[in-house]
Length: 236
Image 1 (cartoon, rainbow, N blue to C red):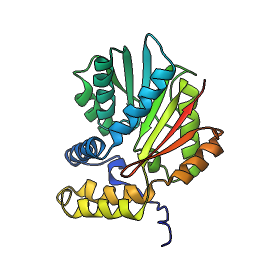
Image 2: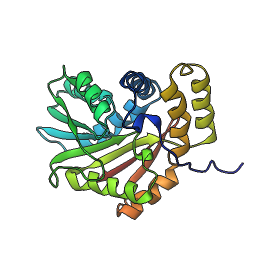
Image 3: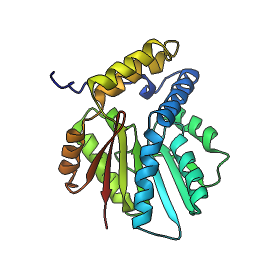
């Protein structure tokens, strides 16, 4: 069977004029995907590894393209359980999404939301210990933008960065289409974006090639069951 080719095309949640109510529903769907299909678990696993190898008294963490801020909240909860002192800055460049993120993280003192474009992060070199981007790198069609994002994550981090994304495969696409026809059938944004996100995402080899083009050939790419792939780049 031939490999599933990577597709281009805009996701509806990225549209600047997206209905806030529909966007909120789609972000809630994404939170469930992260929780039940491994996105949050992948981030915490690799974050724990970086923390273990690079002990600090305090960690500043940047979450780029945060969506509704669910992963920063899970990081704050995990850090509290582990007795770690963390501050998380959760960024997005979609104004409506950012407002929804602010509402979602407002109760957590260690998390704050801020505007930022992943391709031109408004932060100083090594301003954060660790940088993250989850289920968002595939939103960039242009390979040059993907490389730019990876370089920005590297620039602003002292220890390194984690890319957590969907792994493109025919099985993953079948699963997304099944969800679109059932669980998401009354959610027009998610019904459209779910299968397209899989089509736009990366295979482990493609993510490895992107890292090499960005200058991070020693970055480690990990495949995670069922449909996740992660790139971890350490600077030290």
